[in-house]
Length: 299
Image (cartoon, rainbow, N blue to C red; front, side, top):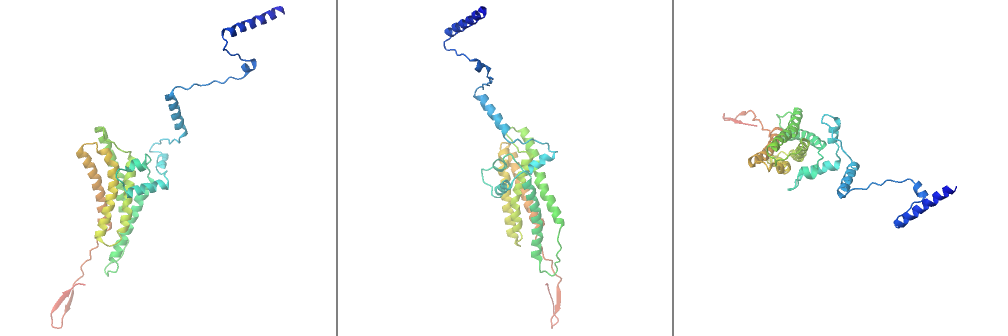
């Protein structure tokens, strides 16, 4: 018993000597030692903190998983667009503003196929229906005119417009990809962005083809050329920043090809769908006067 008390007093003496050596030291009671201890993680410098915040932001932000072009999800994402976005892009294509790139200011790395698909479909309908109606208005009342709806023009219009909206962007995208490898300063958009720009640029042709119902050749030419200028201006503003760093002759050739193909589309629509119907000459009518003179005249 005495040895136990002596050992306890010895421990108190050692603790007293330790406190005397370090007067600022703190002691923990037995209850505090029994509490569960929580580990703390010390963060690094500011760069590590910013990186952690960036990672956290990326985790909290909605992630869009990249899908292959052979999957259904890939095409579903291209049609995932709301009405306000489509209307904003249509307005931008109808009223192009200098200094505003259609891709950077309106697509914002989110191209869609919903707008271009329905713009092309609407243009196919308007150019065929209005063209047929314009011919009927012009020839209505003529005795030698028999009305027959020309449904084959719907197929022709669909092939021409959808081919233009897909094949021309494909050729332009491929050429810019090649030039990008040759000249380091040349840039390009993705294929879907290129298709989206061309699809929305055709929206200017829809009201112009509707106005072509009026049987006036000068008015039709003017309205179609105005639509061509508006839509062509959208394309030039979109692609010129990428091609201007190329060779001067090549850059001018690319822009001239874009404008020329757009002009051919407008002229082709005018000549094929809104052609001027020439009246066929009637057979001359022979009449005899009372004095025996023969006169001819046309109806």
